[in-house]
Image (cartoon, rainbow, N blue to C red; front, side, top):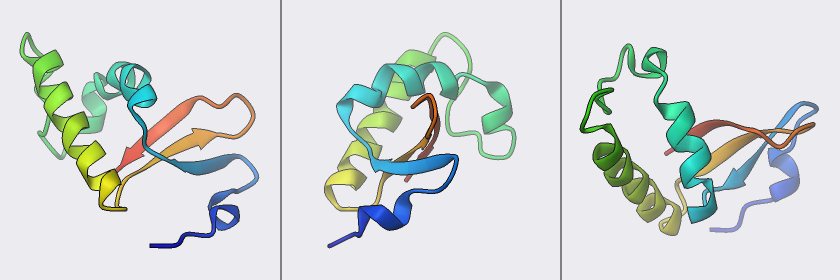
Length: 84
């Protein structure tokens, strides 16, 4: 699949393809219970780290299939969202 990366850049945020280097920044962000309020994919308990690794690995598999991306803030390059 060919994607024009220029179309994924806005004034304040941009999408980039998910990579293993995003794992730890997203681990911290995904621990916010509000993210999972309507979708109980990750338990915020003692099993969180193992469940998160499974979730992230599945997202990397989607990336290999061309379906996962990472949303970043343009000014400070901080990760905002993982999309899969």
